[in-house]
Image (cartoon, rainbow, N blue to C red; front, side, top):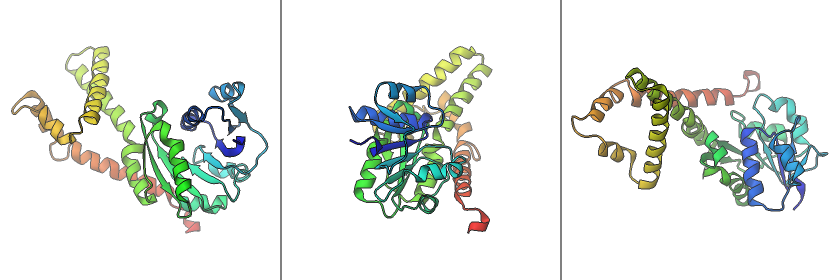
Length: 271
């Protein structure tokens, strides 16, 4: 396998997690990493003979762009040097559309992927939206690349990717906020802070595992734990009141999707 078969451009947290999964799934293979200041696991890969770092560019088989979206315009010339007629480009950049990738990179074999942060421990979700020119083999290669991060959903349209990003892409922040406010609410009722944090994390972890393993709809599990006129029902009457949690989450996801589409829109002068 050529070192240029998989080129990782940018080696931050998510790009690095994807690369680690690829290395584990391809024993004996090496990847090419382009990073201005390689450190940490990148230098470890290099020392172990699993990576070539910052070599002269040549067309890649599979090129993953894992830089921040605001860095993309300044890195374009360096990225283009790795793109050839047979290169499949996989982007994890939020807000950079397929049309933008095709136009700026000069290829239509582009795929957008939106992973989330639990992918760093193999428990994530990655949404996948390919360009119209991508083949079944191109899509399969991208799905295999993302598989070590957890569940891969797709292929889907770019419009669907934007809508679903409000759930899975932003979702970890909602869960972390829930743990935060649950613990704070318990502290307000007299539970010691350390205990409240432990109980919040353990409760969310256990509930998510039960939901995943039971196969039952969330509403059914909710009803099973809610005794009529009991303490859980008293709490849910507050959380499910008009304007409370269901309404707030609909508004929150709508705001996230609207912002994603705003960021994805070309500048006014380019429309």
